Amino acid sequence: MLRNLCVGLSFQLGALSCVGGVREFTVMVYNVENLFDLDGIAVYEEYSQSKNDTPFPYHAGRLLTKVKAHAEVIAKVGKGKGPDILALQELEWDHSPTRWQDVLGMLERTRKTSLDKLLRGYPAQEIRDMPAEFFLLKALEEKGIRGFHVIQPKPDALWRKKKLAHKNVVLSRFPAHKILQHPLDQARDILEVWLDVEGQDLVLFNNHWKSGASGTATESVRIGNARVLRKRLDAVLDDNPKADILLVGDFNSNIDQNLRFGNRVKETALNGMLESQGNEVALMKDRADLYNLWYELPPLKRGSEVYAGEWGTLIQLMVTPGLYDNRGIQYVDQSFGVLAFPGLNTHPEHGVPLSWVNLCDGAGVSDHLPVIARFRVATGKSELPKVDAKRLGGEPDREWKRRWVDSRLRDKRNLPDASVLEGMDECERLERMGTLFRVRVPHFDASDPSVRIGNEVFEIYTSNYRVRGAFSDLKRGKPATLVAELGLHRGAYQLVVKHTSWVNP
Image (cartoon, rainbow, N blue to C red; front, side, top):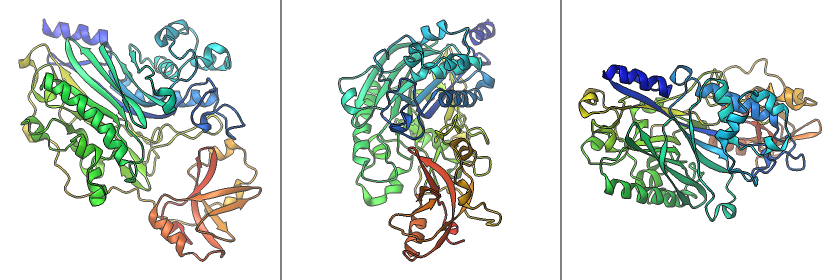
């Protein structure tokens, strides 16, 4: 009887699967890197549709490429059916007057029109009025991924003053019976969603905190962001200590932020104010109320993005003790992972995320890799398998274990000279994004490194402090030879130097 019920529910809900009467569902957390619409109103200049603002205006072709790429990544989950809960960050906060149109109604009205054909009709007003999430949902539907409720914030009193570029959105196959939002200083509102998962409450907090994880200057702002979340989390747990709660999103804090900052700050937002930690046993024995699922993986396997050649863990998924009490909803032990697909969303050689590039019809996907975890839900306590104590993950880090991208220059032969970039159009240069070039600088200046190629000046950029040191060692005004990767930042080409072996190789 229970097996038949399980099969019926699985058929109705798509990606849900059943194991011995226990149903599993999947949660995915994904920063989609500036998924903007086509209304021509953008906080970021590089997503403007006017050549007065950027040399490479955003257009329908780029949006089409971007949402199709995201759909390909999302379709890797659930054997093509996608996750059951998709927590998204960096969808554009729609500034057009008709921003609160019915997204699901739009999907229904355009069901017989392909996304390609729809976007060929741009700039029709109807298309200009469609928000970014519509285009993503349309791309997902064309991959056979559907059945989502669309859960998103409404403008708070300060949204215009804060000039928000982004919002957090939740796509869920489970209905929401309560939606709250919590304004943050210099960051996107926290979206609190209470989902009805077959009669069980699952509380999800979707976050995107203040940026700047690499430096201490903005940590005080993130501490304020964390304080808002901690206060609300305490209120929910005070009411029900066994509540099933997920804290997800882009926290712009690494899970070992306290170790990275050392004694440069008195307290960190994630480890200090929020009390994120890595001891799974402490959670199960009620000595902690949060467990960060990154600790399921060994340190050298952790990473959702790369900055200055080092992997970070900004995209996170945290759980509370209720997800370990063998009733209602439970975390499936050791199911946490990172979605990395060489050639699709990661570089086939180095494994770094393929960031989005706003050239020609666009390329890449996102500068963040998504994370994923599975959960179980059952109708009775006895149906849920207990956590296997032998497989418990997580140990609190006691030292900073750094994971680097190996950018050493192994073969300097046959590198094209950067002079070949002269006269290339943006589509030709798009094909060469990530390509290494030999750059000859007649008069190097470490205070303002750049090189003229034809009529253009290319900035020479590095985020690696060791490379900056190597730049400083070069004699000002003297010739220098560099190896650099072609990149694009905010509508301007860059030649990016990633390793000291790239300086006078």
